[in-house]
Length: 590
Image 1 (cartoon, rainbow, N blue to C red):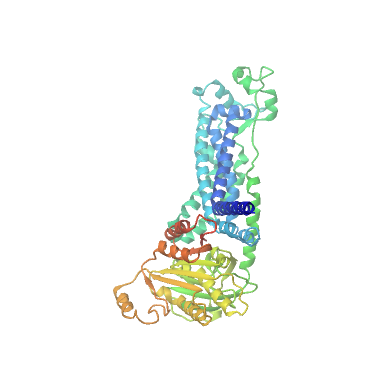
Image 2: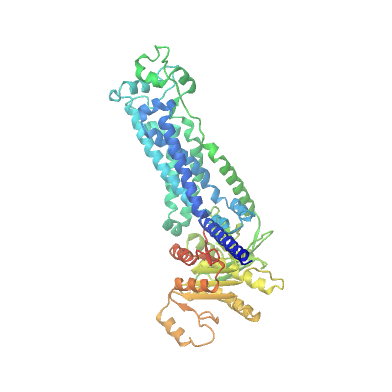
C-alpha cells in the first residue's frame, strides 16, 4: 500500500513538473512573439536576397549579361526583389481600419497578439528603413551597371563584350546593351528612359519621406511630415512602371534552345555563321512589381474610401472648455459614433487646413453623451485650431460660430487593453495622460452602475508633470473618483501617484507651509503630490510583491526615453516562474 502511495505521489510530482515546464515554455513563446516575427521578417528578407542573388549569378540565360555587368547584376536584382517584398508590407500597418478589424477578431484579441498590433507603427518604420537600405543598394548597383554598359562599347572591354554590345544594330536583332554608343551622354540617356525618370522620382520621394520622418522633424514640423508622406502616391506609381523599360535583359528561352552559351561563349567569332551558334536574342523580364503591391494598394484604396465617408458625416461641437497650460477641451457629437476607453480619433479642421488630419486620444468615457479630446497648442495646426475656437482672443463663441470639424475613427490603441487585466499600471507624462482620462472616467461610470461586472480589480496610476498647472484640468476627475471609491468602500481599488518634476522656490515654500493639511495643496486630493521623479525599481518591486502570481498590464504614454526604462523594468521584475508575477508592457503609439 505504501509502495502504491509513493508511486502516485511521484507521478503527481512529474505531472506538476511537466505542467510547469509547459506553462513556462508557453509564457516564453508568448513573450517572444514580437521578436520571433521580427526575426521571421528579417529571415525572409535574407532568404529573398540570397536566393535571387544566387539565381542571377548562376542562371545561364543571364550569362552574357554577366559578361558585361559582372556581379552588380545580381546585386541590383536581389535588392529589387526585397524592395518588392517590403513595399508590399509597408502599407498594411497603416491601414487603420484593417488593423482595427484584426483587433476585433477572436484570434487577435488576446495578450501578445493584441500587443503586437499596437506596434504597427514601429513595424511600419522598420520596413521603411529596410526599403531605404535596399533602395540604396539598388541605386548604387545600377550606377555601376550603366558605367559598365558604356565601357562595353570600348575596345578595352574585349571582343566578346564588343560583340554583345553591338547586338541590336541589325533590324532582326534584340539588343542586350541599352547604351548604344561609347560617346553617349549617360545622364541624358538616364533621363529619357522610363527606368531613369521613374527611378529619379522614386528616389526623390523616398528621400523626402524618410528625412521628414525623423523624430526631430516629425515632432517639430508635423505638417512637413504629413505632406511629404503623401508623396507615397508618386513612389508607388513610379515603382509599378519602373520595370516597363526592360533595360536589364537576359537571353530568351527560344534563343537558349538554339544558342548554348556554354559552347558558344568560346566561339563568338562564329556567331551568325555556324548553325550551332546563331546570334543570341535578348529580352527583358515583364514588370512584376504590381503583383506584389496590388493587394495592399487595393486594401488602402478601400481604407481611404472609408475614411472619406466618415469625414463627410456631420460633427456637432457641443462645448468648448479652456483649461490651464494652453489645453483646450472640445466636446462633440456624431451619429452612430461608438467608442471604447483609450481609443483615438483623427481630426480635420477645414478652416485651418483642408488636407491635414491629426491624431488625438479620446478623453471622454463611452458612457458619456458626447466624445471629447484635449488639444494643446504645440504646432501651427493646433495653434490654428485654438485660434478658430476663439481661445487666443478669450472669446466665448456660440456653437454656430465654432469651426467645422471632421472626425475619422475611433481606432484602437494600447490603452483599450487596460480592462483585460485584473491589475493594471497606467503611467503618463504630461499631456500623455489623455488616454487614461477616458479609462478612469469609464471606471467611475462602471462603479456607479449597479450592474458592475468589471474584471479589473486594481489600478496603479502614475502621472509625471513639469508644472502645477498641468494637474488642474485632470484633478476634478481624480477627486470624483476618490469620493466614489470612498463611498463604496473601495479606496484600495485606485492607487494614484502624482509627481511634480519642476517647481520654483515660491511654490516650494507654499507647498511646505501647507503640507500638514488633510488635502494636497496642489490637487485638492487626499494623496499628497510627490516631488521629483519616481524610483521605478522600487515601485515595480512593491507592485510585484503585492500581486504575486498575477499578469499585470503596464500602459504608458509619454517620451521614448522613459518608455525604455519602463520596458526594462517590466522585464526585470517579471518572474521566470510561470506561476509568478508577469508584467506586460504596452506603449501608446500613433
